[in-house]
Length: 154
Image (cartoon, rainbow, N blue to C red):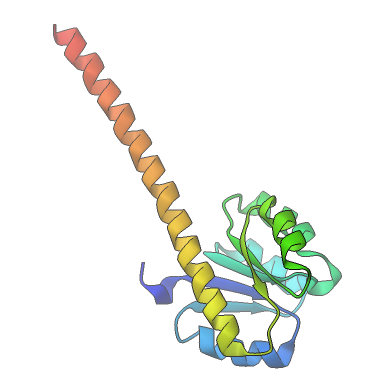
């Protein structure tokens, strides 16, 4: 997959920060930005995203609450939480909800983009691992079929 085809959904609260960040991210990825929970819901219903970056307190809700809705529509969704909360506590809580990482709160768009790039690499690795596991299962199934056919020939 070309990097530009990688689709990211951003659900962040700080508008000034977001405007600068989205410009930077769009040089590398396809980026959609949500301004409200309603907008977020509409975006989630419209399509699949390779990565969702959500502010821990987006739209007055906590990220893990929002993720429960995402989980229903897109069970394999990969998401990262943007937070200024205590790292260990938040990370432990969110990893249980299958977040792949968290991004520390920053006012520097370049630093944020670096963190998103790291998350993108993790998301691609996770997707490729799942794809490889499916391929291996198919191969194992085909090997079993061949063994069965060979036994019949004997």
